[in-house]
Length: 292
Length: 135
Image 1 (cartoon, rainbow over the protein chains, first blue to last red):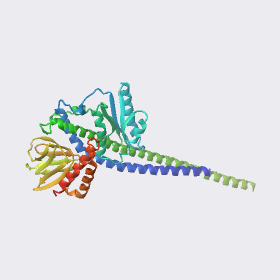
Image 2 (cartoon, rainbow over the protein chains, first blue to last red; image 1 turned 90 degrees about the horizontal axis):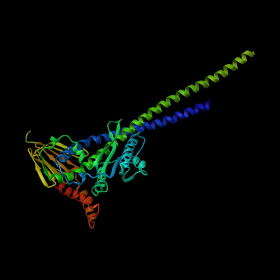
Image 3 (cartoon, one colour; image 1 turned 90 degrees about the vertical axis):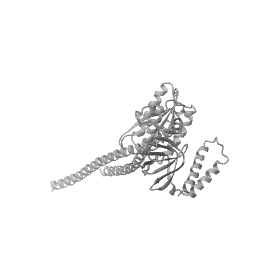
Image 4 (cartoon, each protein chain N blue to C red; image 1 turned 120 degrees about the vertical axis):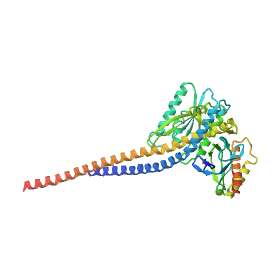
């Protein structure tokens, strides 16, 4: 009986240590999430304004020779996939991976060629042997600014213009709330359709453009891409911390439950040991008194 | 007041500036231009250069990166990738940047993919030195 008591005690201590770790991770994720959310908040005015300008420009420029707006028959497709570098964040990465897998399978069934640009280790590791990877950015998400988005855009744009591929998509976890992220797939290139679904046509005031609308558009499309990519990065980073916070919170409460049940087990085992010992003593005394 | 212009400068990191000013001068893609209240609606690209605004008859200088400016009658919105107050520029550092960029560009082929990037940082360093002298 004594050995079992010791065993239960040992288990309970081990679970408590795990609980301390998960709780610490939960708190770290919470503070990182706060910083990431702040970054998202600060980016919003810039992104909003740029979208507005792009929308009004794209609405006005009817015919364009801009290569980034050129619609071609999409034979080769590239997807920028954003996942985290580290795990322990619930289904966060799995959701994006599943989405990309479904997309890839669908396009391949149509006879199209799909390759990936991966941000984050998890997605790259999953697809490394399955799909062609044209570019990868790992260990970048712990510290980044818009220059990372600029690098990704810079690597993606020239091959599109050169006709190495025909369509560019971006897949990432949209940050809806701390507890909820949903994978989304958006088309980045050719860029026309995104501006087209902008309904606010009256927002296109009568501007004087300098340089010409066409040249301005040539400048603004890469900028617009950078903004979308940066937005994806920000939401991925915030989502990762949010998902980790939630999953570590769950792990902590699971540990607490386990500790509780182990304590109960320990107490009843101890009680059983005491009762057994008492029975021994009482039995012995009775035997003695019966003799006398 | 009716004769004042609302100026907003936004970067990807933050809303860098938001106040009413009397006049603002911007480094447009086609050359420098000034904006007063009542300007015609105007949309222009911005190149790396000097931005200054006048408030209470005093000029304040900034260095801005690439971006756009949108002007309506009462408001000027400037979207740039970076901004730096002229007073916070360290001239020594800018001079060092300039020299190192020049050294790297010397003898470099224009076809080199890094050429554009280094040329840009050279422009930035040169403008930085110029702007810092205005303080």
